[in-house]
Amino acid sequence: MARSTVLQGPAFVQDNGTDKPQTIRFIGPSRVLAPIHFFRIHSIILDGKFDVMSFLVPNQPALDPDVTKYLVSVDRIEAVAGLTFFGSLPKAGCAIVKSTTTSRSRASPASF
Image 1 (cartoon, helix red, strand yellow):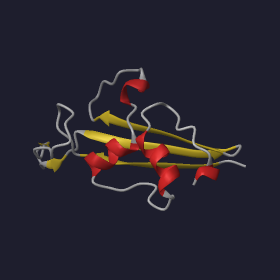
Image 2 (cartoon, rainbow, N blue to C red; image 1 turned 90 degrees about the horizontal axis):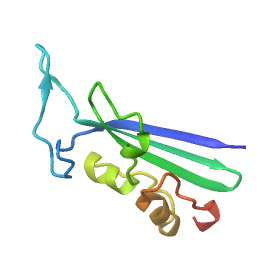
Image 3 (cartoon, rainbow, N blue to C red; image 1 turned 180 degrees about the vertical axis):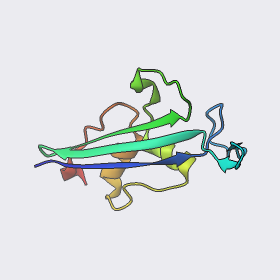
Image 4 (cartoon, rainbow, N blue to C red; image 1 turned 90 degrees about the vertical axis):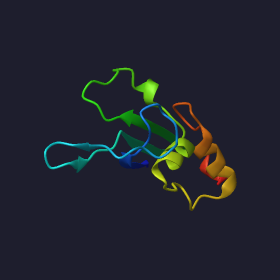
């Protein structure tokens, strides 16, 4: 049996990609607050393996079709979103999951 989770939300980061807080950007006549990026974290446990892929995607109409350009570590998303993910995992397994910038964490739930 597989278990999958997707987390997503806004990320207010600078256009130049730094982790410093963004200058607030408003759009439209109603001056709606618009994030510069969105994050998405996909996690799955399948056949005893825990895999995670996390993305930080610019909020713009035209995106690069190569989604690997948007792969980042969960640590990076935590830094720019001001949130903590996988906080209930023991430190050993959590470090593997959160620091990876590859497409898969290759962590075993047994390491948690």
